[in-house]
Amino acid sequence: MNEEKYIEERVGKRNPFRVPDGYFDQFPEQFMSSLPEHKPRAKSIWLRPVFYAAASICALFICAGVWLALPEKSQETPAMMATVQQDTEDTAFDEAVDYLMMDNHDIYAYLADY
Image 1 (cartoon, rainbow, N blue to C red):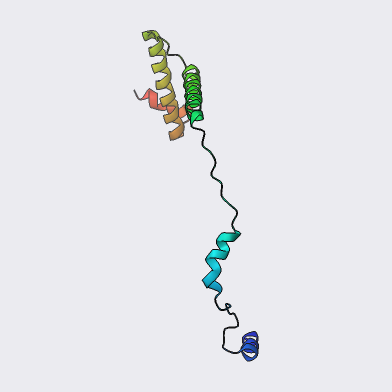
Image 2: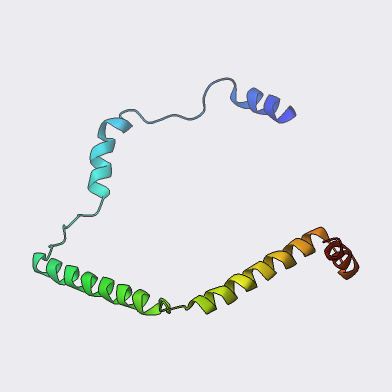
């Protein structure tokens, strides 16, 4: 608070910052003259088809890589499907037992009731 009073006593209520007269009259011209010259680059139109061809070849290689990385579908027999189904049922039962926190004694008691 004391600093504010000191500044107010010293400077007063007037704004100590001023802009010189006519500064903004010539400002845009001075600013534009201080910028470097912009030279547009010549566009090479004949390179555009080369870039398109290169992009197409890259896309082709990416698609081929993804297609070759995919696993092949095998012909599964009904016996294989039954084994997978049995494994899935056993897994589901094991998950249910783990969820219920049943031990061997509880499982034997549950199965003995049937």
